[in-house]
Each structure stands twice: as C-alpha cells, then as structure tokens.
Length: 363
Image (cartoon, rainbow, N blue to C red; front, side, top):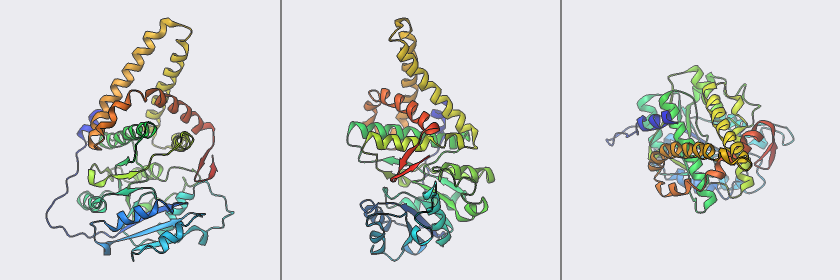
C-alpha cells in the first residue's frame, strides 16, 4: 500500500493548454442502458452541454431489452447526434448471454463512426469539459487506451458515504498501478480507447462469456498488445460521477459481480494484489473471532487492525483531496468493520456464488 501512496502522489495531474485549440478526433460515446428511463435524461443533458464540438461526437445509447421507457427517452431526446440502438433488433430475447453489456458495446462499436470510443454508464453525469479533456489528453499522448476517474455523488447517508470511501480507494489504486506499471485497472463508467485498437485485439473475443470485465479484461487485452499504449488520465475535469446503490443487497450484488472476474485476469499482478488483500481481511475476521475465546490474542488483533487502518488512511487522504471529498474521511474509521466483512463475503461469493445484475441471475 505504501508503494501505491507513492504511485498516486507521483501521477501527474493533466493540465491541458488553455490556448486556442483545434480538435481533430471524431468521438463516439457509448451508453449501454437497461431500464434507465429515470437516469438517462440527466446524462444526455450533461452530454449536450459538453464544450467539445457537436459535429465531432456522436452518442449511441444501446437499449438492452428494457421494460420501461428507456428507448423513448432516447428516441425523443432533442439532439441530432443521439442515436438509439436496440438489442432486440439484433438478438432474440430468449437467446441466453452471460454478458449483455459486452454485446451492447460491441453492437454500438459496429454502428459507430468515431475514431475514439468513449464509454460511460446510464446512471452517470459529468462536467462540461469531460470530452474536451479526454480528447486533449489523447491528442497529446496518443495512447491506445485511457482509464479516467470515477466518483460517487449524492452520498448523503452513512451507508453511501462508506461506499464512496471504498470506491475512492479503488480509484486511487487504479491511478497508482498505472503510474507504477504494476497492473491494469479501470472502470467502465469512464473509458476511452481507439476503435482500431478494439478491433485489432479482437474486441471481447475470448472474454465474452465472462459476465463482467467489459473494462479491465479489455484493458489488459489492449495492454498486452500495446504495453506502452495504456494511460490513466488524472484530471478533475475528466471525473465522471455515478450513484451509489441504495440497499445492502444491491451493494453486495455489485461487489460480487466485480470480484467474480478476479480469477479471470490474465494480468496476474492484479490477481496477486487482490489475493493478498483478501487474505489480510480474512485473517482479521478469523483473529477477531478467536479473540472471543482467547483474550491473549487481542493485542495482536488490535495491532494488525491499527496497521491496516493507518496505512489505508495515509493512502486515502490525498485521493480524497483530489476528488474534493475530504469531508468524508472521518467516516473512514467507523466504516472499517463493514469494509472488512464485505470484502470477505463478496470475495467468496464472487468465486463460488451467483449474483443478480439488472434483473438477471448471473454466474
């Protein structure tokens, strides 16, 4: 974790030139959506407020067999650069897939005209300089794949604050491993990659039967083909904001989905890190249980717990500063029992259990 502290601190914030700038990159923003009629309007409005030239980007929303008014929200949205693709026009509803999201992205890329593919989720919003910042970063460094920051917003109760802190930690590690070149991590709510790179690595071929992994598994495929072509964009203007989940059941399903791909990574550097984190938390749970019967181990348990909390807090504080969420840090300490237990449970069920995602039971 101390090396991650160094990595995040050394990762430079991208400050694009403020001088007059002529953009040259055509962008396609892809949004997979299933039953998102309430979330899509704020996202589409945020995209229409982008400072990036309207004639240089298109928005493709892929309706994943929604049972609400998702398709109509897109169909009647007053913008010429918004396009609707319906999976029902390409797939039979009875056809069983394990990764509908990958299929949605794949269909959108086939329909796209952009050179740079940018993906986000239907429950997200972003600032007006989001696309501009991504494209300036791309045109400055010419990476094949860009991972960019994601943060929770509307974290207005204890449960959501804990989620926000946990998510910030993962975002900090994402940036740190990119700088240290010790792994490949990203979040599908804020990605950009060249359409040609996606096609050259075969898209999702070989990972299409894994329910999750439209982000990190694809990132590693591109990294494997272009080791110097993957970068992390550290900029507040590039932050995408998404919603925490409302219920513990929803939270656990989300985290089980994320952990379910842990043993699917070809990038074993990340697998090793995840295994070490899991073992550390299992040790804390077991030792905490044993101290009930053997008080002599209480000091060892307290020492390990304090060590974990201090190291993680040292790492988290500057990350929270970047995301302008320092006010959440006091909640870090009472949230530790919740964090330790969820890591152990979600890690186990991600390997051996099933979970529900978008109303579908997935293995």
